[in-house]
Image (cartoon, rainbow, N blue to C red):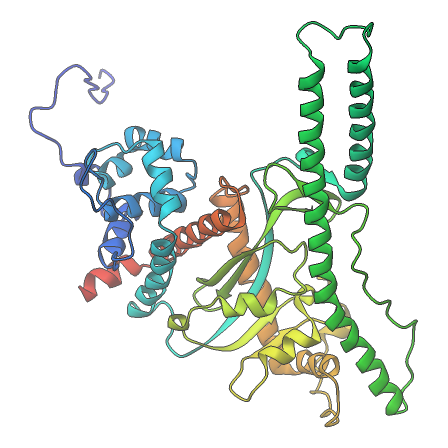
Length: 463
């Protein structure tokens, strides 16, 4: 018997207009994105009210296009434009229209309020379909370094900027002296002394601005560290008053002067040099923060920080959780987030959430002693400081069980965003625009997560 093959006919045109919905499975993500956006309130969208110029693309379609693109790992506006031609699901989403990359980028850049509101509305949608619980929630908080849209080689350190200013001043004096000499040796072809002087003066002004910005950052850092320094001194004094032994040298007070290695980036001045990977190298980055609900693994709070570490990030990151997400019962954080002042500020009243923070880094390996069952430690004294309270809290059976949820909650979310979606670098510059893009990344992740949990079927049943 002759071998049989499926007939592949690219020459015969389609006799009837195709319905793109027949070309995309009913369980596809694009259907859920369209249904979810249809359920959102889009009154925050920015449109041209004058009615002049070309026809505008409908805001629901543009929002759905951005959410679907970020949920599937397409972040560049040019690649999103290309997907309207190459991708069948995107053709269905856009109804076979093709917004150009400039339109896509402008819509993304000008609708921060809409994206923030949509982030909250998606969380409410998750509650509606019983994926995110109402009432008190427990969140795991962490931060991850995401590359800025700027090279670290475009940065200059405080010390180097001072050296370059001195060098430029010397070169300007040499050029002025050369201009006064009637028999001066001419410059290379195309180079003129006035232009060279102007170029060096402009460069000197830019370096001076960089040093001024670094000095302002150093003063702000000094103000933040001063309160923590005073807290440490107060704890040492309290131990001495109780007759306890105080080891080590007293903590050194912070200084308002910049460090020689403090840097300023000319491409994206609001980004910072941060340790990357295992701390073996540095990259020009932002600190992207996320608070993840432990049951659903949905991101319920997000923000972008310029701080190279998480020491001062706990309070603002928890404050970024909208009230619509629910009442916060507990927050799980690693040792990098702990500070006595932050924990006291969060647990300021009986209604405040309980913080579970590791006090030191521990090995993932469990020894034989760790496997042995132990009873809960004895109650602490009434005058115990916050560090002692936190250590005691994580040694209890309930505290250990709750804190184990942190590693299996927030770290896999960052893994999905970076390894699965492929988001490792911001496309925009400046903290405001970077924050907008991080909101869109978290929004896309949440929509994809809801789809994976079967929220589409639950939403269809509800409607």
